[in-house]
Length: 75
Image (cartoon, rainbow, N blue to C red; front, side):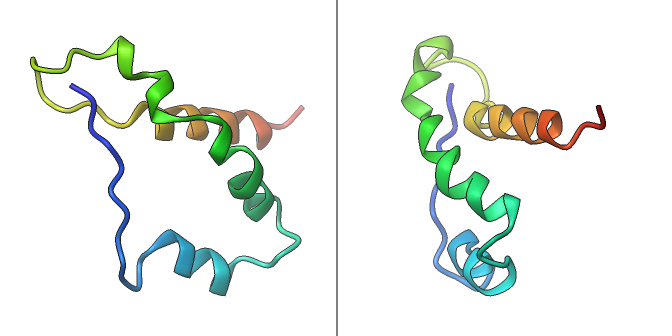
C-alpha cells in the first residue's frame, strides 16, 4: 500500500517555508526545483501492494533523502 503525499495549506507548507526561509541561490532550493519533479510517485506504484498491509513511507521522499545524503557526503 502506497501512501501519497498530500499538500498542506498552512504555515508549515513547504512552498511557504521554501519561499520565506531558503535563499534563492541555495543548493537546497535548486535541489527542490530541479530534482523533486524528476522522481514521481507513479514510478514506485507498481512496487507496492494496493490492498494489503499498512501504508509505506513514501518512496519518493526516501529516494530524495538518499540523494541528499549522497550530495552532502564528504569526499
